[in-house]
Image (tube, rainbow, N blue to C red; front, side, top):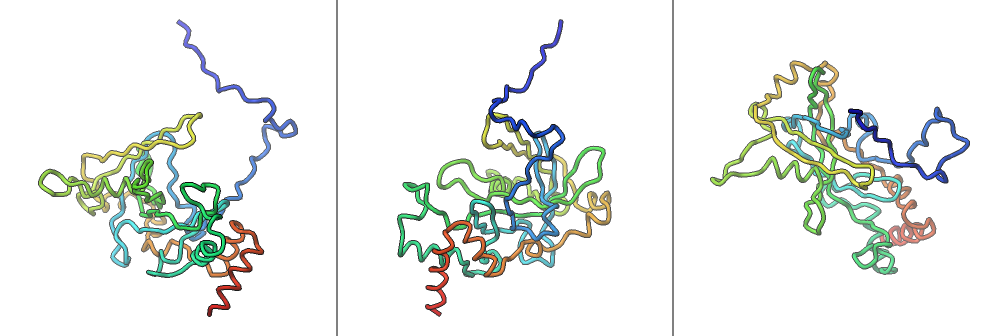
Length: 270
């Protein structure tokens, strides 16, 4: 019996670039992800379709955070960066000033449930933690998990970062932790299974915990020295933009002449 061969869906011929050759490099993305410092950006964990097994790295003694660091991310078309309150409680961003100015002068221009075409100047929760990625036949690798910390309270699916945190805090009928996934000795591996069809806009993720303890020291013993050396407090890997850099980002969201008005109003209030 001949096994049927499945081909990829037909491509709309009108979308084909007739001048491009098969060897032409795809156009580089202009998206500026500035949450992580440049020297750590390549360490970000990017899930491929299928299963990825990882071990959560416990909190480092020198860090002010636990094993997971909460991040407030300012997202705009073309990029994102960490809100200053990620680093300092009650710190303000120029996006906050822009929100206040717009709410007072042009409230109809702000994003809302009834005005989804408006500009969005508020931050979104994200989560960050160190992970050791384990693959059969390969040395473990150190990676940074950076994912959504949305808890699903406003509808929709909770972010992957929040799902991992919640799974690590599940309690049994007696009120005890089912598994402390981040414990240095008794913590277990976490499996993230990603599936995304060609027709789907967003991927789906399934989580499950391993059954056997995976002591961090045992994994470190198998790792290359440079993979261990990169580990540092989570707060050291998050980039903090200068005020001027934030104004430049805001100019990608709001017309430059409006940004000038917002900036002038802020300076006059000082």
